[in-house]
Length: 393
View 1 (cartoon, rainbow, N blue to C red):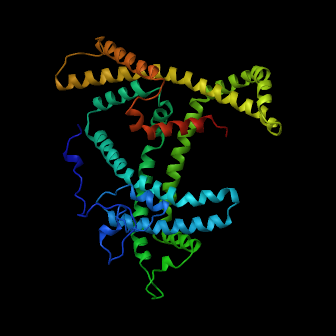
View 2 (cartoon, rainbow, N blue to C red):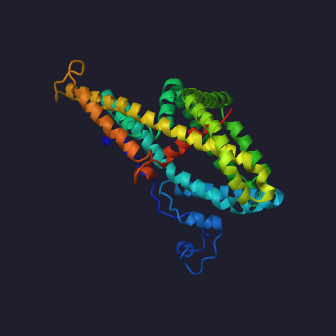
View 3 (tube, rainbow, N blue to C red):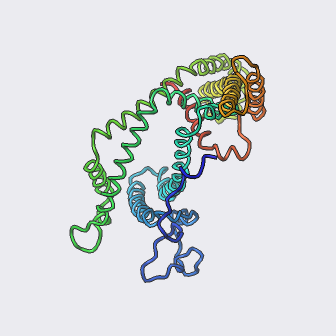
């Protein structure tokens, strides 16, 4: 679809696939470290979490070395935190290494996909005709404008207010991180006392964190880092402010409905709750009723907003799609239709708009399989933005 030449990926360095299991000693054959080997020692929870995910061949050794270093740091942090934490938090620190390493493995495997999609997006933006890009964006609005109304609004606001600066900021941060990684690899191999053991393995967690932070500050350009962080934060704040202003009416509607709903719920539902609730917990009932009414009312308000957004975005997206396709076909000589004098674009656009709005409303602004899996990250962003917009300052 996008062509093959702009996306030729560099051949990875030849290396055999390997699992993120514990590194075997040099004298032990590789097969003996397999989890299926009967002679393999029992694995901890964090190591089991690593075994189930296989790393890509490229940069496998580099990531394994980084993983082992992070695993030691996390283990030290968890041990110290478990000693200082209250009793009810101690079980959390027991699962902290396993959970953290699982997240790191997930992010490691997800990063190539994110990079690949970003390369596709950049190439499409720079090479595809404007008419086709407009048509594709129209289809997106038509079929997902109500489901992802906050995410799409945030994207449009971000493109207008802070995209260029944020792109430069991310490039500067990436360059700073690259220099830190190169310096960190050298720092990890240092043995200044000459005892045969690396210095990073002999210091406690506090000193190790201090050492790495100092190393980052040493190799980074403070002006570029400051400008990059300011650029990202200003873009994020601008988007959130735009969303809060745009959807203030929805949140206000939900809070108003919740306030009016609280009195009848208190009169008719509270007596039943008093009977089933323990006496020592009844003091929380007024707050539970108040919060529950607001949650239900705000959810109803967001549903109404989704219906309105789906209809509006479907009409807008359908017309964008039809006019973009017709203009591109006219540009290539496939059709001879003037959108200013003909109604063909209106007929096609409204037909696509009906399909898009029906798709969203019939699915209850959810996503059928496999779209619900493929678009899960965007769904999480949508709920996060909804929580941020609905929360009080």
